[in-house]
Image (cartoon, rainbow, N blue to C red; front, side, top):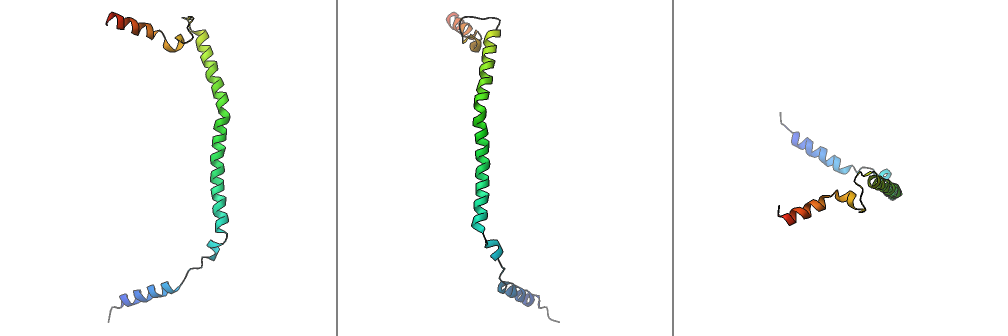
Amino acid sequence: MRDNNDELLDDLFRRARLLKPDTTQWEEHFETRLMAVLDEKRNNRVLWSSWSWRLVPWLALIVIIIGIGNYTIDSVSSGDPFATFTNGDDDYQVSSMIAGG
């Protein structure tokens, strides 16, 4: 008995090459579907950026309120409006540079 697996396999590949798949359903309205997907992705990106820009004034207001509260509640209140941010470290650094320590 002769082993003809190679011939059967070659015949199977030849028949498969002769069959062309029907791709007309995939090709129909391809550009429309592609543009719809791209438009949806573009609109999602615009939505997030518009929300972030709408929140900027509210976040700035929160920062200003915290800054005013920090300045007024500070126990060591001075005439310097920037003393809240420096915390007196500038005086210490200047005196240590002068003293050489």
